[in-house]
Length: 306
Image 1 (cartoon, rainbow, N blue to C red):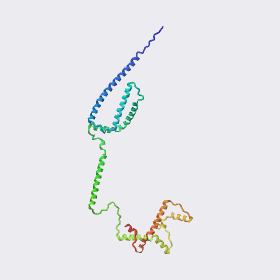
Image 2 (image 1 turned 90 degrees about the vertical axis):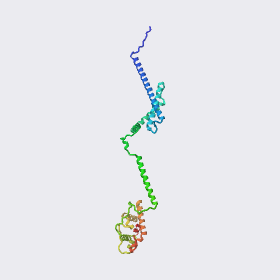
Image 3 (image 1 turned 45 degrees about the vertical axis):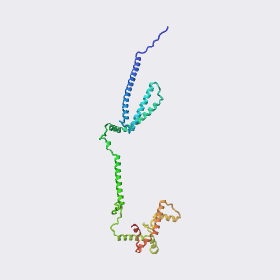
Image 4 (image 1 turned 135 degrees about the vertical axis):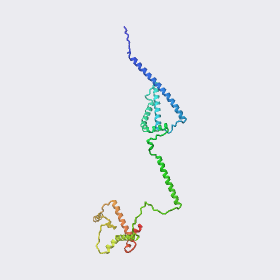
């Protein structure tokens, strides 16, 4: 005996699936119709824009480069998406398609452009208003800022005027038009005071006499021919013995007593050597200072200064 098994389907399941399929088909048809109408409108607008560009009614040169990059990237992005949709409609695989890598790259470019566009938003809006209205806003706060070009022009004009004045002055000097000599006002001039010429000579002679009496030669002559006791002074004078300080004298005594040399710094050694040379030079070259002691002219330094 054969029993017949009948398969029954739930009456509520089939209508739901068919309803979903029907809804999907309707949505697809509406989307396709929307795409077709949008493409027709875009073609119409693009044809009119291309015509204006060909007739040079619209200037597309020297625009904002970041907007060119943005719109070009968006166009390529939409083109690649349309390509992938077409492959899916034909039942082809898109997992390893090169269009996906291009979409990732273009998406990254668009994301990087967004913050830059936000920074330039004010300038872009300003240029759009100027292009549409044909004039600038008188209350624009950026119109009151300094213009570096004008500043450069003013400085150039001043330089040209100064150059013309210098050329004119040089030409007058070459022509022989010379006036009375006028010393520069900013040059330092020595103030001689209210002394007369004779008073100046007497003062310089007195200084030369004092310098001659305190010279090394006079000190040695006094020690040799006078019967008074020898004096040792540590006051500041132009003799070599008095120039050396107490510390240097103790150093010299120590070296002579123990027959040894103490280490000397390079700087101190150089200064000591310079003082020795200056003292010897004064002894050799200052014999004329002694002439003031018997009524001579003397005053070598004053004559050199004059």
